[in-house]
Length: 220
Image (cartoon, rainbow, N blue to C red; front, side):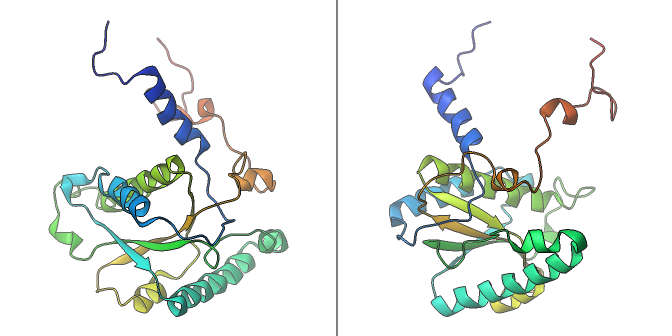
């Protein structure tokens, strides 16, 4: 059956390509990001779906060098705590480059807004849908950045209470991600954690169930 809503073959290929070639980047050049490009990327994030159209995302652009240094310190503190919790993999973890906060051209913090309890639509039984909505915005930003030839890295090693205090965030809000954004020498040919032998990705067929949990073969 003909589908008149379908994008052209080249447009579809571009969408699938940017999804496949997106990488969690840790290595950046310090070159500044063009303001118009940054605005397009943030607009892409802002067009993300959100439950009940609550738009719970907030993006804080970090432009003060001292504040960037303070955020780096928070991440380093959590990196040490995470290494200790990993026990036998501690040394291996400490050898990984986990962020590019010092080098990236732009630094953003993605956060959940305050006063989210006012939004009931779609959240009565699943209040965490606000977090899912912010994750969609981050993914939009990530894909748009890749399409613009910019790298992005999602850093989650930080104490959210300490970071919220540092950024003078209101009660009820919560930082979710530190986002390193900028120019790169090259995109990793495969996810960095695979290249570093930290973990291996599961194939889709292992994660796709049919009708009931764990059933990996369809009866139809």
